[in-house]
Image 1 (tube, helix red, strand yellow):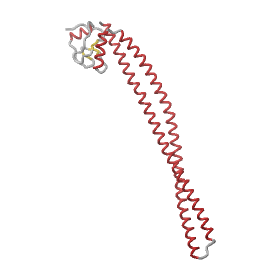
Image 2 (image 1 turned 135 degrees about the vertical axis):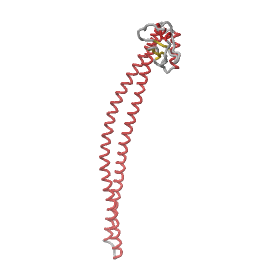
Image 3 (image 1 turned 30 degrees about the vertical axis):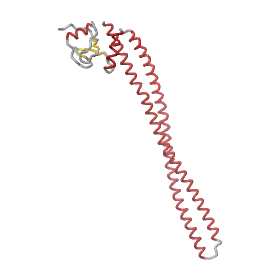
Length: 241
């Protein structure tokens, strides 16, 4: 019976190892997703500045075209000025030219402001590109490391699953069924160690006579409180009443 209980203890250890590897392996997709989110955020920030720069460039081109059109109007008005025949028309043309020059000055001021914005945004775009490049390089390295870890977990899990099959095959069928039944209902722990006449899982004090029997391994004994199969891993103690 001692060997049968030892087989169950070994099986539970494998199951515990499997659960631990599964928990660790779940970290891999979570971290990969986090890295992708960080890269996405860095790209969005870069694209926001880049789009802002392109928008300012577009406005600048539009203003430059307007200034060019105003220049053409001023040239035409000055040409017409030489053809006027009376003082009234002459004054009207001067007023028109003056208004066009004011409009041109206003547009040139706006153009100067846009050029300053372009200069600032160009620097910001360069800075964000550096940040993005660093994120991409760092993300690539991190993803490779996590993917490598994930592959390692997969191999470890495959090995443990194979070990479990072999370990389960050595357990008597009735004991295996009891083990699986308890494991399904007791948060994955079908067995509990006993020390100093106490269940180490639920901490219930075990009656001395039952404690003595557990140490002898004459039969499978379950905890009166948590119902787990009890086992003793130390050296047998002197029997007490």
